[in-house]
Length: 389
Image 1 (cartoon, one colour):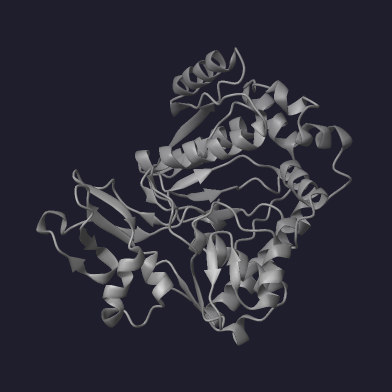
Image 2 (cartoon, rainbow, N blue to C red; image 1 turned 45 degrees about the horizontal axis):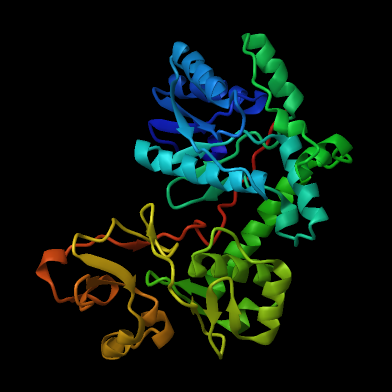
């Protein structure tokens, strides 16, 4: 845990009841108590099996009997295609929202060494690039919390043995072995001896190189755009990783675009990809078109803010950006057009543009808003975790 800190008094842990997350919950609870802190176990109930609700309730009660605070997050996902992918996305969203609500700035997840190897192999089979083949990061940044995976170097067998010694019985999700799902088929075929720790070290090296390149070549602005020095950025693998991260945050997306698409964009020198637009000349990366609405405290996947005040609507500044060229000559017109703006709901009259200090209505003079993109920070925190045994 030490390389992933420092920590506050409350830490959230995603707990499914499986061996990995249950072991993490037990270990984190003991670790937090020794330091005068506490944990909150977050139990996601997807509603995909008849018994899942009862299992989540029983898990919550069992944890609370051990003095561990818990909360059940019910999703109720509908059946349909991409079920496991949709479940993962909904689970992540629910966990992070619960962290923000509870005031827990850290979310711990129980991915272990076999999960890391499985992720790497799965990405390899899907043609992932060098960054994807580096595996999951031990620390990643979301707008709501830091996501930590402290057990990536620990084998699952060791976690199961620890549970046995503590007298805890994990819950087994049958979907983990259902051959309908690609990851279950992959598990059945074995991990082919992949060394997860080697990939973790490789990921740390890639992250360090990307952070250094971004520091030299990029200036990410609070208006949600990026100023780039193309000659310093380059077109190599590190440049592709940097540009992919920038496209993700500027475009307001949860995930970065494919490496091949990023390579093509770099070779072209300008263009659109993933909701972002790289302007001719290569100096500016801006939002292609601000079309997303306000949802769960986030507008257009980029700006963290409260819901619009009564009688007002929140949207992109759009063509009215031309009115502000004199006061914002440091930004391209396309970046100005994508800025958030409040308008009166009745007549659509412009009322407030926070980034440009424009205020036509005293009633909404204070509207807190800041750039905090959906997919988290553009650079990955460089952390290597070492585990013995």
